[in-house]
Length: 256
Image 1 (cartoon, rainbow, N blue to C red):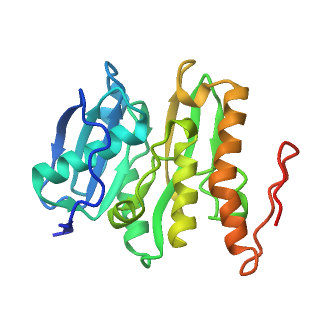
Image 2 (cartoon, one colour; image 1 turned 120 degrees about the vertical axis):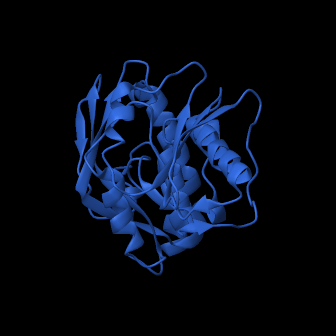
């Protein structure tokens, strides 16, 4: 049936003033889709419309609260786990302002479910549109690139077992780059990698006030924190085993 039942390893991170809603709940769902919402935020009509263009059975939950995005998303997972007593084997976070390409969920699932368990996630082509205009092709997974910058969206499909085992990154000191920190954490803790899915894509609408549109100084500060806490340990851990590039950044220095 594509459903898993397991002990709850990570409890709700912050449950005060959280609101949950089951938007869709298909029988024999293979994917749990969670849309985290800041308090008072609404889902876009484009997201509601384009998510329907999939054939795979899935469950879609929204989780609204005054927390960062990963915290709200994980609270949504745990709330649905407690409510239903079971979870699909795959997880996909969809932001509230995403325009999904046709069959995006289908293609991500087909790609990931066909892989061995050491591949923890699949990711699509995407682009920012609006205040930011930038495209990110679903390039080959490469730790040498990932320790320098994130080119993979948080709107990717993950094995639920990976989330249960490692856990998301919730600390506000990485906010704006929490998704990058999580991808590095997967590799640091378990050696888990991703696989590109160039067969699908989505558009993320970037507003002036969105996290992706923050100032350069703030981004630089958060980037150095992620490098210090995640990228640097990866380099130290794998320097003798793999040819991992040393980040070229004049603002800091890694000492081996």
